[in-house]
Amino acid sequence: MVNGIPSYEEMMPAVLKALADGQQKTLKQIYDDIAQHYGFTDEQLALTIPSGKTTYVRSRAGWAKTYMVKAGLIYQPKRGICEITAQGLEALSSEQLINNDYLSRFEAFNRFLSTSNTDSCLTNVSARDSTAQSPAIVPHKDDAQTPTEMIEKAFTALNSALADELIEQIHTLPPKFFEQLVVDLILAMGYGGSQKDAGQATQYSSDGGVDGIIKEDKLGLDSIYLQAKRYRDNTVGRPDIQAFAGALDMHRARKGVFITTSSFSKDARDFVTRIEKRIVLIDGRELAALMIEHNVGVSTRELYAVKAIDSDYFAEE
Image: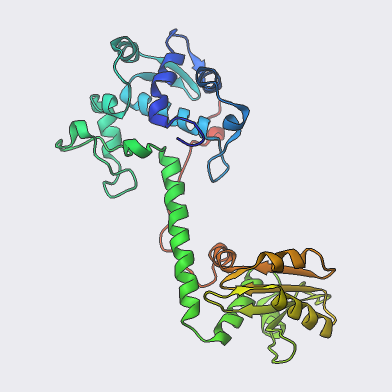
């Protein structure tokens, strides 16, 4: 469970009971019934999945509904409207636990699941049908997340592993490469103007602890000074940040970015909040995340388009 919110599979009986009166209901009415059934708090109802696109309650209740529609326990006469079927009423009266194992007795549900690639994140064979030619492929019972949640969890895990690889790769290359990487990243984030400006925006100096200078805007009205420290284990402390602030004074600069592959001490982070100059601190994890976000040192290997109904297309004139 996430903050006490049942998995989509655990929500199946509650979703079906919400339709037990045989009346057609909107998804909102079902969500409201689910919330009342479980007594969710406002905090639980507001809790969103990592993408922020929807809440856990709506996501899980929605997937529970979808799976039971595929099994024939729920019928959708039109988008956003649900009603229980004879099979659904039979499931409720049977007093059996309604979950993926129960749904896998319906051929329509198995056909739906068999379209999934058996190497995907949904590859866990139902214990009830592990020897069938087209087994029901369902999330593991101990972690029965919705497909959307599993995709996002896998995406987060892949990016986390990629971040580790990026930092390790940086440590294998010369210091000058890291300094150039920092400049490339700031430019990729939209500073420095055009690519033609990029070459002019970069300069290195052994004087004053400045590793690069970037125009903040295309006209060059202001500049951002960069400091790059490629540390593996050393924590960047307050003295390093004070020295960088002094370097900014030498250049009569007001803005700086200090980037390290390691981390900053609490004193260092507190220091930048108390000085007049604007110094942004970027540690190793933030650096890797920015590189991934702005495609610096990474390339797209695969694209998976997650599609949804285009409501405008199906709208009646």
